[in-house]
Image (cartoon, helix red, strand yellow):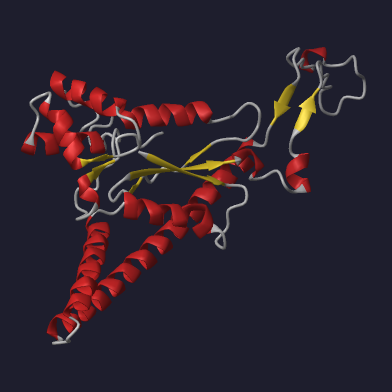
Length: 282
């Protein structure tokens, strides 16, 4: 699960890409198929920038006396006199705040749809262009064969990455959450509750509660103890031999660690598949 956090109070169509779009671009390349949760901050400022909104909040005094309507004598209708709580209370324009949050959600959903549609179109156009260039290079009987082979390799790697992005799109959760920037951090408990429920969602995270054998756990601890931020595949194989883990079981083990975000392993990349980033959170 990856959280993309933006300032809801200042977001607009002009800055959508810098706030959200560029991060989605990065995720689609580095973690195809990742589950993304979008969170807006500063929700308390969405409707507090105008004089009208400011007038809609008021501080109620410790004790407020309200004479009944049409009464000229303060002693009349004593039963209609209401006494507030002894502690000061802030009365917020909850309805207006809720409508502002709803409007912000609608804006984000619309901008997301435009972004995703535009992005997919660009990727498909680039793939068509790459296919044309690959065919052109393959058919050419140019003398500089080494140059052609290098160009073909680069284009095919790029082609495979683009196809992987299309085949494994980001799973952007439809529900956008909001938190306040006030000292009370309103709505933070609601967000925490949402994240806890997501963590046990077997549809989204089928590997999160998977039972793994003890020797896998011991190998994971051993890998985490190694210095640096990455290990070559040969090193991983050497360490795994101590636990009698090799070949297909080793690949399944590293894939499981990648799926649970304990390591990063680009198994589909011809070059990076030989490297395991065993401390991605450092």
